Amino acid sequence: MQRIDFEASAVATLRKRVSEVEEINEDLIAFARGHAGAVSSIHEAVLAAIACDDAAELATAITCRWPMLLRVDEVAFAWSRNGEAFRANRDGMRDVEPRLVERMVDMTRSVEMRSVGRGHPLFGAACESIRSEALIRLDGFSGRGMIVLGQGETSAIEGRHGARLLRFLGQAVSHMLERWPAP
Image (cartoon, rainbow, N blue to C red):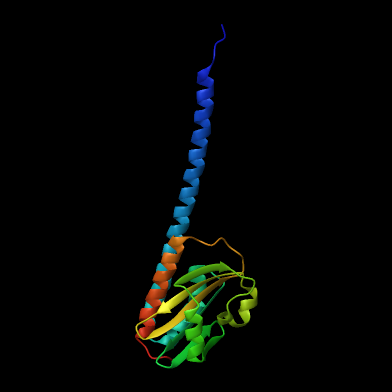
C-alpha cells in the first residue's frame, strides 16, 4: 500500500502563500509611505502658498520653492482674470494674451498626468528636458489657469489618489489667486 504525504505538500503550499502575502504587504507599506510623503509635500506646498501676500510672491513660491517641496524638476503656471493674464516659470513672470490661457485651460481636464517627448510650453526653455508632466487646472470664480509640474525622467503615472492631491493643490491656488489683482 502506498502512503501519500499530504503534510509536506501542505507545508510547501503554506510557505509559498506566506511568502506571497509578505511580498504584497511590503508593496502596500511602500505605497503607504510614498502616499504619506506625497500628502506631506502637498501640505508643505499649500502652506508656502498661503504665506504669500500677493500674486507675484505666490508666483515666486510656486516656481522656485515648489520644485524642492514637491520633488519635481520644474513648475510653471498661468492665470487669466478680468481680461488680464500672466504666466510664470523659473525665468520670471510675463504678461500673456488672456485668450492663450483660456485656450490652454479649455483643452485640459482638472488633472492630467502624462509622459511626453517635450514638456508644456509654459516651462519655457526648460520644456526640452521634461519627459513627464502633470497639468492641474485652476478654476476660480472669476479667473482660470493651470499649473504644470514637470520631471526630466519618465515616471509611472499615479492613479486617482495622486490626482486628488493635485486637484486639491489646484483648488487652493485658485482660491488664493482670486484674492489678488494680477501683478
